[in-house]
Image (cartoon, rainbow, N blue to C red; front, side, top):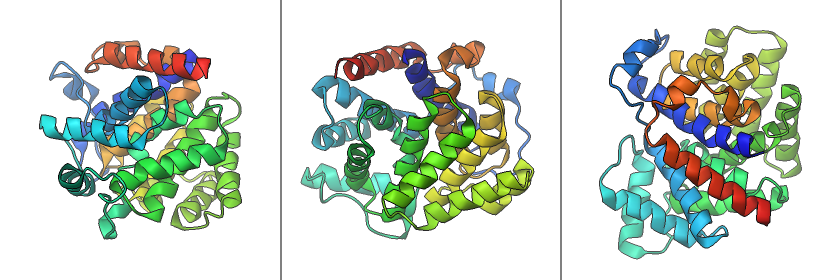
Length: 302
């Protein structure tokens, strides 16, 4: 399971870093790994930074504490290293800076249906790997509430957390998709996120090519697009790199789509099956390993 935990967070960070240079470009994109590596270090974005904020909070508090997570977000926000930060998160953390009220700072508007909660949910999924789905949902909801007071943003993040949870089993991939679908139904989450997952199932059944599927599913920062495209990429390929690169080639919100795909694929395949030559080029990878191991120790002892 430690190998799975490491694969999840490093898979997220690596996907984020590989997708970052192409963010906002219109697909199809010609992915050039040598060009990505030419700058030396593979640098990740706000996706990984916010996920690590959650992990550090859980390690420090030895529990899920949304107030402390908000404080960790604020510390990052005040650092000024806001590479890739989305408008909803920026507004929410600006509100939190003024109010220090994590329950009141989240944004309620059209843009709040973005993927900012889904991109950072992996540490919550890991922390709650042995908890009930109801506990998992509550933690996802409370974290989402800090920035995105939006049903789709939260249910999309819950779908990603469910996928991570089930992928940790390492069983049939089909079971991951079935589990996500079934649990959303049990929770009464029958919305556009659910509809998009049903579309993923249909596209896989029809063996639609990935580039055509991504056109149908969408690859923007809209959480419905990110969740469905990430799940399709994970299901469609049989290894980490092909899954991640496929969503990057599709364009648009390449870093977040690759980060979410990378988290799911990373926990499924495990750390030892990630490309080590790329992990070693990843920014702060040893620190991420250390954080992941501490998080695993907390979960193991709970």
